[in-house]
Amino acid sequence: MIRVSVVGAHGRMGSNVVSAVNAAQDMELVHTIDSGDDITAITSGNTDVAVEFSVPSASLDNVLALIRNDVNVVVGTTGWTEDKMNRVREELVNHPQLSVFIAPNFAISTVLAEHFAAQAARYFESAEIIELHHPDKVDAPSGTALHTAHKISAARREAGCAPIPDNTQSDGGSRGQIVDDIHVHAVRLRGLNAHEEILFGNAGEQLVIRADSFDRSSFMPGVLLAVRHAGKTPGLSVGLDNYLDL
Ligand SMILES: NC(=O)C1=CN([C@@H]2O[C@H](COP(=O)(O)OP(=O)(O)OC[C@H]3O[C@@H](n4cnc5c(N)ncnc54)[C@H](OP(=O)(O)O)[C@@H]3O)[C@@H](O)[C@H]2O)C=CC1
Ligand SMILES: O=C(O)C1=N[C@H](C(=O)O)C[C@H](O)C1
Image (cartoon, rainbow, N blue to C red; front, side, top):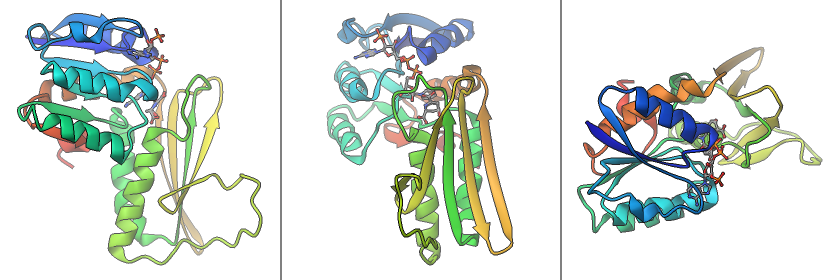
């Protein structure tokens, strides 16, 4: 049995993870932790893998505390910068057997959309991203959109693409945030869950790649897959595509 603890367990994602772990034949739920609880209760003595879905401002400290207690971590929380990931890498030097896995998105539809977008990126003059989410989300743009923008940009750089054309002369904020040269637009609308559209354009043609997570159950197979991989590839890794034969 894989012993699993959940951080952010009462949240929208954490509560789904608790149910998914309870339903998995090969997993046993140990600790459930939220804000105000003592995360150091999660140790290698009681837990093989901690799943962390909290808030961007707390996630790094939670992950560092779990590493110090020799626990593998699967992270779904957003807000990961290169600086924060470097802190994790530093901490892992003293725990070389551990794995920390961060996934900007655990839904297969979105992981594939991002993969296909990276493949398409070099064939188009223009690329923009629209992400659409429920209005209770605290961060914008989404972690997924940031990750997708970086992947598209990397693919375009590698292919030597020309800069994306844009003759905007004045912008009151309506052109979105520029992330690694890609314009990213965020919509917050009651009724939505998590959605992403990647738009590519050439003269006379357009390709739209769209992924829709209508329900948080869409993230659970990816979370369980990551839990089952935990500890097998020591160090920090990012993205569910690491575990898919793409
Ligand atoms: N990677 C992916 O596939 C997905 C990622 N996400 C991301 O996951 C994160 C959580 O989203 P969501 O579940 O909707 O958010 P919620 O606000 O519903 O849940 C957050 C939970 O974290 C808890 N929490 C807050 N601070 C701490 C802390 N210091 N230590 C431990 N727990 C804490 C909260 O507890 P309390 O209420 O007591 O403060 C709450 O239970 C977000 O960053 C979101 O973007 C979401 C969906 C999919
Ligand atoms: O907050 C959410 O809901 C989601 N957050 C993640 C993100 O910011 O990319 C993943 C998914 O889009 C749902």
